[in-house]
Image (cartoon, rainbow, N blue to C red):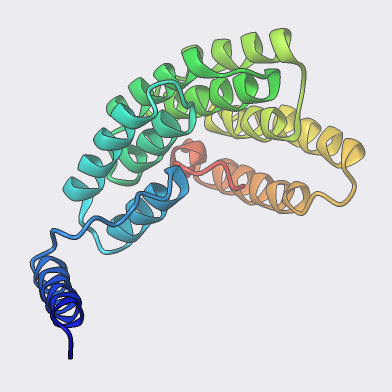
Length: 207
């Protein structure tokens, strides 16, 4: 065996050993595959209940993609999941600054209105909703939220009217009939007990 061949074999062996060691201790570079990879990691961590680590991943994402609306949207979703509606609202306000389309603006504005509703700020939530509709038009989501707001106020007839309009605009919408049943049930409970059954309405918009 020639000296050159022995040298090549030696260098190859050293390289394999070095690569194995670096891989073992976690130093070997694994290329970052992008925002979707980070989102998957956040979802995995959230699913395991490791909220703090999920937040740290989002902070890194914020540095990598400072102008991508999906990052504050993800942060808003995460903070909502742990019940911090204040932090969630701040994240969605940040997302609002990065929206590029009318559809994105409408989606975020309605989400902010719903957060306000869940915080008990019904008048502010109603104003936000109507401002969103005036700027970007009506949608199934705005109608859903309007129904929930009317239910929260105990305005049963008006809420039923909205569900009928929702069904007329989208006959295949699976939520309209469910909302009507819930409204009637709550109204009956309201009338039977003499108390405000709207207080039982949860944080979800039933979507």
